[in-house]
Amino acid sequence: MTAGDFEYAWKRVLDPVIGSPMASLLYDIKGARAFHRGEAGREDVGVWAIDEHTLMVELEGPSGYFLQLLANLICYPLPRHVVEAHGEATSASPSSRSGRGSAEPWAEVGKMVTNGPFQLEAWQRGESMVLARNPRYHGRFRGNIQRVELSLRCEDWSAILDMYEADGLDVVHLLLPVVDPARQRHPGEYMSRPLLFTRYVGFYTSQPPFDDVRVRRAFALATDRETGLEVILRGYEGPATGGLVPPGMPGHFPGIGLAYDPEEAQQVLAEAGYPKGHGFPLMDLLLPQGWEALAEYLAAQWRENLGVEIRWETMEWAAFLNTLERDPPPMFVARWSADYPDPDNFLRASSVRPHTRWRNEAYDKLVEEARRLMDQGERMTLYRQADRLLMEEAAIVPLCYGRVRIFVKPWVKNLPIGPPGDWFWKDVIIEPH
Image 1 (spheres, one colour):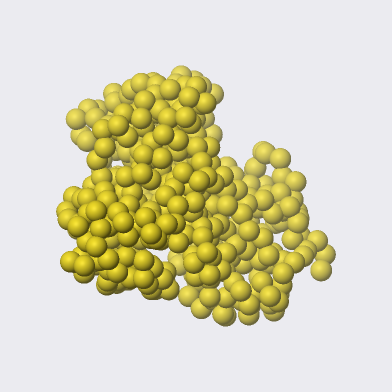
Image 2 (image 1 turned 90 degrees about the vertical axis):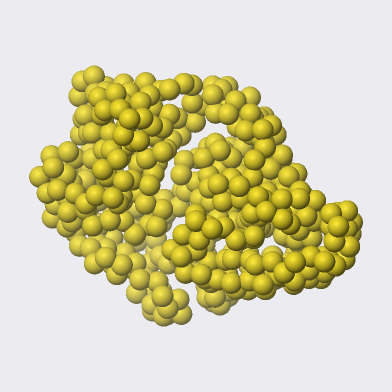
């Protein structure tokens, strides 16, 4: 691997022919935006391999989060000789938010080149993946794992739990329906760590009634995000009492959200012209499939505390995202997961403002100034002000913060799970059992 592999990879992501949905993450690089839009050439992008060991990057301006951005997989190097030898798919990207990857010919078994601790041995798309220890890996390898078998099919969670209890799985990530019985039977094998995402209610602020900040604040004040959500989520995700930036990330400030206050909620809604909900139109709430219990809870909260009726609908994930992009409903429940561990990704570069159509000049000024500062303390101060303003304006109502909840067999040691949800297998030890 050389510096040239990074230059090639970054410029490839920006190539409009590739159609990467994540290319905008690299717009801080000089000329990147123009190249991606077809207004400049590849040679105009400010990334050059000076020699095999030195990569020079020229930015459009100061970017206080740029080093954090380098942790994103979009900045990983690519083996140019393999990509060009086997060809590549276009208008898709392995870094797509869908998580499904793309059918890149150079990434197939037997063609993919890796410099990590494991290499791809087998892959049945959507079903399973097998990784084998890479004999050419030069980093420190403190574990004893020679082979990792990953099951990617997660439709029947009860069956997956049965496999775990029959020792067919060493580690398993379970979803809400089976977490409670698993915790009761295997309390000593349960692990929980923060994940860098926030689930929230978003309001379409360009049309009535949610163009009125008083209406949005009323809904926020009428939402019990601690006692009630704890019952619904049963600890699966942590109730959000702070802003949009989640715990585990610099720039998270607990307690800056609007506190649960039904009486004030009723008063604010009355000031907006809807005393006890009278005259308030029937509103639609859109959610991804699997969150029906949350929809029922929110509708009940707003009916009881505000006197308003909410009609809700769930959609398959891809259709849900497409609807948010093209025709956002009056209300929706979405989540934002970190692309890089910096509040800039949540407060400026996330989809929150595009989906809610919320605009605020003071907010824009804060996040733009923060992104250009090099002093991290000053940056966090500005991000706190911006996140607090977002809460006060109630363009969104954070509901809960992400957590990874897994069960690990007693013979699995040194399993480190990073806050973004990365799995680092190379240091894991499997003891005799």
